[in-house]
Every structure is written in C-alpha cells, then in structure tokens.
Amino acid sequence: MSALALAILFIVIAAVGALRPQHSVPLDAHFPTAPTSADLAALRQAYAGPPHSWPRPRLLAGAEFVEMAPLALREPSDGRERNLARLGAQLFEDPLLSASGHISCQSCHNRRLGWGDALPTSFGHSRTQGRRNAQSLFTVGYKSQFFWDGRAASLEEQALGPLTDGREMANHDIAGLVARVEAIDRYREAFAAVTDHAHIGIDDITTALAAFQRTLERQTRFDRFMEGDNTALTDAEIWGLHLFRTKAGCANCHSGATLSDGRFHNLGLSFFGRRLQDLGRYGVTGNTEDTGRFLTPSLRHVSKTAPYMHNGIFPTLGGLVRFYEGGGGRVRTDRPVSPERAAERAAAAEKSSQLKSFQLTPAERQALVSYLEAL
Image (cartoon, rainbow, N blue to C red; front, side, top):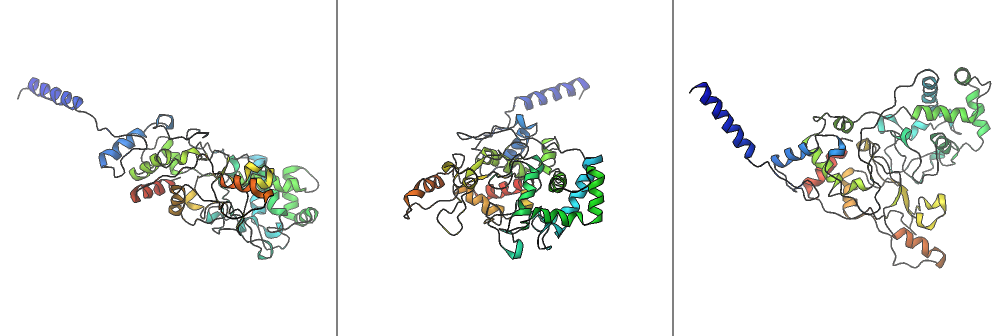
C-alpha cells in the first residue's frame, strides 16, 4: 500500500471514530446503580476538572451550598507564633492544667485517635462521664463557632471551656490554675520570652493552646484530587463523591473547603423527654426553634474520628449512612408532655429541611463510604 493510500485510510478511520457516538450516562441522581466500566470512566471524566465544572449537586430548599475546594493550609508559622504554638503543644499534653493533675487536653483529643478519644462520650474529672462526644480538632483553626452547640465564638474561648467545666478539667479557681503553670520554671521562662509579660495570665494560656490547635490540619487525598491529581481517588471513590453530591444529598449541609455549612440542624437525635435528652443549640440561645439543633461538623478526616454525632451513638460510617438513608431520627410525640414544654417538643420533632430519606444499593453504600474514607 502506498504512503498516500495509508494516509487516506488513517483519515477515514479517524473520521469514523469521531462520528461514533460517545458513551452517554446521566450525570445526576439517576446515575446507574450498577455502573459499567464505561459508566465509571464517563463519571471520572466529568470530575476531571476543577470543582466548579463538576456535575451540579442535588440541593433542597434552604441549603446554603458553597462549592467544594481544597483547603488552603496555613503556612508554618515562624517567630512568635511558632514559639507560641510549641508552648501550646506542651500545655496540651500536660495534666498540670487539670485540678486533679491527671487529665490533659490530650486525654480527650489524642492525635493517634484523630484528635478525639474514640469514645461515645468522654470521661473527665473523677471519671465523670460527659454527655457529648469529644469533637476532632483537625479543622478547629478554620471554624468560627465551637462545640456542638456553638457556645464559643473563638478558639481561645473554646480552650477555656474544658479547663473550667466541672466534668472535664474542673478548675473552679482560675487563679489556682495560673499559679500552677507559673510555678514551673520552663513555662514561666517560655511565656516571658513570647509575651514579654512579667507574669502568666489565663489569656496567655488559652492563646498558646489555640495557637497549637491551629496547626493540626493536614492535606487529604480529596484535596489532592481537587487540585488536579486525578489518580488520588479510585473509580469507586469518585462514584461515592457523585452520590454524596446527588442521590444521597450530603452536600446540602457538607460543602465548601471544610465540608461543613457552619449551621445548626435538627437531625431528630435530641431524645426529647428520654434519658439521653440533649436539646443542643437551645441550651445556648433559649430560642424554641433551636431545640435539637447541633452544629454541622466538618467531614475532613472523618474516617479517623469515629464514633459519630454529638452523643457518639454511631460507631461506623456505614451505620451513619444508613441513619441518613432513613431520613434521620425521630422524636416521639405520642407521650404526654406538660403544656410549658409542648412548643419545645414540637420544635424537636421538626427536622431540618435539608434532611430527606433516600435509598442506596449495597454497592452504592460502599462507594459512598469509600469516598468518605478519602476525605
């Protein structure tokens, strides 16, 4: 065959290939429940670009969605901030901060346990059991509200909470706590070098603790994927990402760089009128409509931070997905309640408008969990 004929043949083959219809698959909540390799390849291509080019999420009324993005990690601090963070790290691990001398911040926020303690609810002073799950600290440096009920507005204010809580570190006398720290030469000298103060104050201690906690966040595989590393997620994990944004509806509350909308939602887990009752945000604001609402946690590093929810009742991600499939929890309204509490119960029974039931196949459920494990 002549060179000219060979060139013509190649042109014809290329033209036929170009005319062949591309593989088509719905890139929304109707994506196949048992996708073929071609389906998954098409999905990977749809998520190959930056997040703003991805298939749109399925959003419900009232959702405040912010497009996903890699978290911009803060550059390692230097000078004063670096020394303050190092000082905070020492204090974080020191049981001297507790009234008993047996409990440190790390007792409930252990780096080997995802900056939590792997317990449903934590134990504190005199082995007193708290009523809420110890939240992971990975993302605290990027938040503006703290604790499950949002009662602290800064990381420094948050640091003061466990120090003075009678069920945690039980320092009823802040002056005594400060005196114990100031009695240690290395702390006194380190604080003097950083603050130029002759004496240590409680604000110095909480500022150091906060400075350390702002250094805990780390890059994730999902960050790398959003930055353009298409090998960072498997096909199954990309399928899970798509389910997260569409069929499962997770992106209604978990979006943006921190994968949290920073809002308070009622998931039907207040256990109103029962032994495990916790009315959440209501305890801070006193507003009836806040009954049973809790702050949306970040999902970054979520596979390392079990158990889940404000009371730690879900030990696995699979169980958590099942909970959301069923549309959340339920407050019993068939029991008598005093007239003065009727409005509270009605509010507790009114779940978030961003919470709707859905149904996944076992394969879809596993794909969604696989994606969550990549966060």
